[in-house]
Image (cartoon, rainbow, N blue to C red; front, side, top):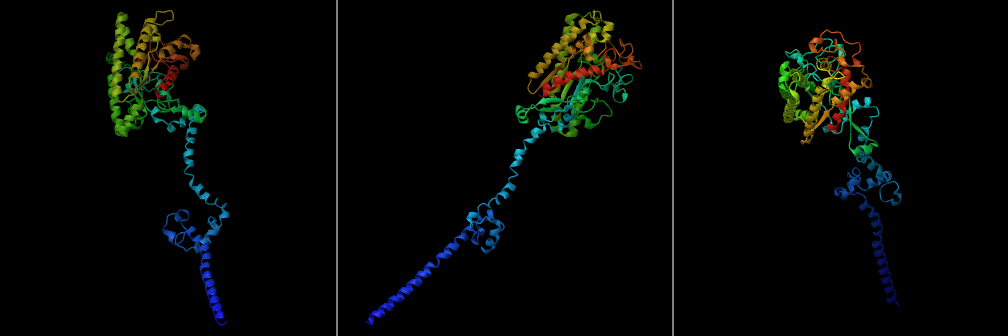
Length: 489
């Protein structure tokens, strides 16, 4: 009996020890649950681990778990309250603040929409040239070669009688002053610079903008292309270096494709004009550097307007005894020389040419006075020579177009001048058979000095017995605008 109680006591002690052991082993379980959160929060060991810093750079700077617990309630992203996931909208806002870099690529579209505002060409066009998207397609410089039709006053510096730097020339020019231009106002190359050519952009741009968008081309002549009000002469003593990049004229009144023509009046022969162009290149190289100078020349428009003096002097001097065969040979001679000049300009960097055709020179007032025997008062033979020369000029222009990286355009002045001669009322003219200066039948240059003029030159086709008025130059300007768009499209 006594042994049994002892055994019971031992068993009771063992049971008590077992319960204590179980309690000791079971007690750690709750800490394990409390220890689960630490791995989820950036604790002391995670300070070196990269995963925790990206989410919370600042909180992980060194505080023990108690600190994140105090910061967690306001931030609400901590995992302990998994049901509070709705607050994660708070982390997205910082991501939305970093998203703005992605919207800018979407904002690249508006520049395409900036191009279309051309509903008012007169107002919007001037602001567009600097924004032009494709600069290689923008004409920025005008270089002019030829005779009195495009000479702004280079002959003022020459010892020649072919001058117009006295009244009544320039009576309708800026300041009502003579400048050496053989007309009452501006030349065609002057008026073109401030008008604007609108070239269609790519089809993609047209689709994006919703309608056909256009690009302004500022550079084919002074007034209508936005370059400058007028094209100055290269020999002008007041010419500034800054004007060279916009364009100049090397033309000389009395010149032609044949050197003999220019020598007759002591004008600048065409080869001499090319020499001045070479000098021009040296100047802009010194001013802008080699690369920019070459770029300006490559993008420039080269206008060539001559041939009338060649035909008149050769035809009148021969008293029409040379015959059609001799005149045909002379045409070939002139075209061959012009072709050589074109190649020289190409070697110097020219890429775009505009060839101005001859007008119906048989209907010039001086030709009517000296040679006109047809019912309409014109000389049909001389007109036929002009038309024949123009056909060969078209062939030369086509040949230039076939050469790599070359473009050219032909200006058909013959057709529009002939149409205005036959139907002057359609063009706002009243007098097409004589000039406005003096009698209008023979006066030109020095013989027009100090002579009285007609009351309204805008109604006359010719200013003197050879040269057109500003009104007629405006007709030629419209042709140039239509043609120049082709070589920059």
